[in-house]
Amino acid sequence: MKLWGGNLEKKDIFVQMDELDIRVGAIHTELGALKQKVKELLEDNKRLSEENDQLRQLFKREAELDRKVVSASAPAKRKIAEAGHESPAVSTDALTESGVAIGEGHDNLTRLYHEGFHICNVYYGHLRTEGDCLFCLSFLNK
Image (cartoon, rainbow, N blue to C red; front, side, top):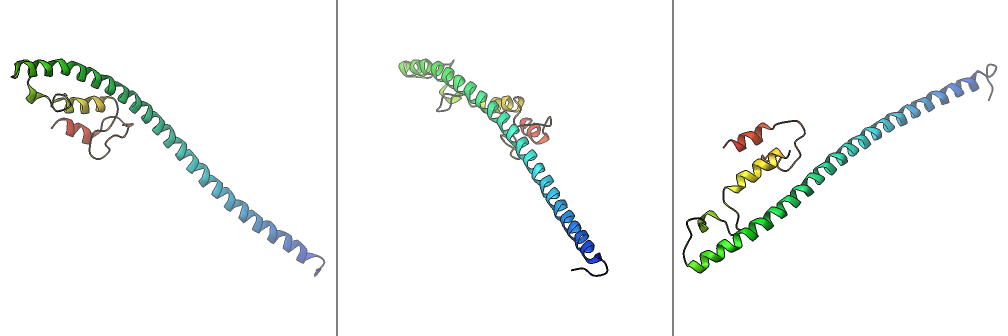
């Protein structure tokens, strides 16, 4: 349709270009948001992978420690049973059913904290990434 010497066609083209520009801007904005989300997911994935690696190492050490405690406490319990009474060196009151000393819980939490994990009730088990945690430290000082 030609009116005024082709001006209507030129206006249609500019309107189409403006609409296309608006759509391209919206797509660009959406693409930026998707890039940000992917970046956040990659950071979370890296953090969780590091935490998993540390936990695997920790579980491996704990399993080795448990084997040592069980193998070390079995002869002591046998001696107590054979003697029919408690030995002054090894008291059954100082051991839990699993053979671990009662005071070791605090030591284990301290070790976990020094290995870089939260031990407070707010972030328990999460990897500490920003230095010391006041909640954890107050818990350790109780």
